[in-house]
Amino acid sequence: MNRRKKYRFFVICCLALDLLAIFWLGYKYLDRKIPDEIQISRDSGENTEDVTEVLSAPLVTFEKAVTVSQDGGYILPCRLLGYIPFKEVKVTPVDEQEIYVSGSTIGIYMETEGVLVIDTGEIEDQNGEMKEPAKNLVRQGDYIVSFNGEKISTKRELINDIAGLDGEEVTLEVKREGESVPVSVTPVKDTKGDYKLGIWVRDDTQGIGTLTYVDQNGRYGALGHGISDIDTAQLLNIRNGALYKAQILAINKGSKGNPGELAGFIRYDDRNILGSIEINSKNGIYGQFYKGAEDGITLKKMPVAYKQDVKTGEASVLCNVDGEVREYQAEIKRIDLNHEDTNKSFVIQITDEKLLEKTGGIVQGLSGSPVLQNGKMVGAITHVFVQDSTSGYGIFIENMLGK
Image (tube, rainbow, N blue to C red):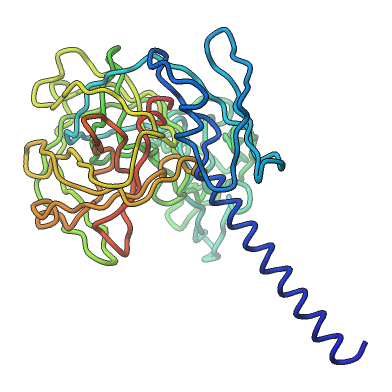
């Protein structure tokens, strides 16, 4: 092959790659613009034409005839350029819903299901040698649930069991990626004469967040994202937990490169318990909001919006940064109806000068702050952009309600 032919072949390959990249980017854009599933009001009288109008996108056509199931739901096939099968949208009719929207600051306390392994470490034995008995046996993110066949739930129980070691090999049962794994570890006697396993552990977590809503059955949702361990970055498996009333003491104002945070005070006594924490999922924390716990908590009844009804433009957020829940102006900048991370479904920017002056925008502790638009609850704030503290991500309320 001469030089000219090689060059021509190279140009053709580059063009082919460019076309492939353009096609892939276009495909991803359309995939995120058109959701895999939408909900519609059972009583609205919406038909397939109404749905396709809402979901309209360039180069995409929808089937005009569909088979409707007994409950009113159906599958809506769509094609690219009228010929290429693209995806099937599941359309589900639901009853219109109203919830009690909050924005109040809450304290969070959770205990893990078993004892969470943060890391393993070295121990200096009596001969001055460094040993790491649990290395490659116990992993970061494991949950220790039994010690020599005896169930353990807390770090204190594990410490007490280790204190009784005599140098014999011990068997730990750990939960690893949903499976039970037996692990044998031989303890090391340290310079003080105590036996150690060389495992760093944690069994609880606490913090400040925002209550998003309470539904008609007294079930609440908060944060809009799950709680992960700060060291392992994994979603915590919880045994139990509780919501508490909390008081804001100070604000570390956000700025570029600094997300900021609300510094709060939680008084852990029974009089301040608001509810139970039963679920820690990627879309938030959930549980029962106790009757009679409403004192000092803002709850405002509002209708719920469907995700396809959310539009870019003016919106508002409810949050507490000065002892009272207030409504602040914001703007929804971008919407992603089909994001793989449901708690990153839209981008929101704080525009209210009063809130910007107080916090710099979105700070840690505001996760779960309700987002309102056109008189409806549309979602909640979930993340702040580290390089732009005025902006962050949000989750659609229908995703929170669906857990």
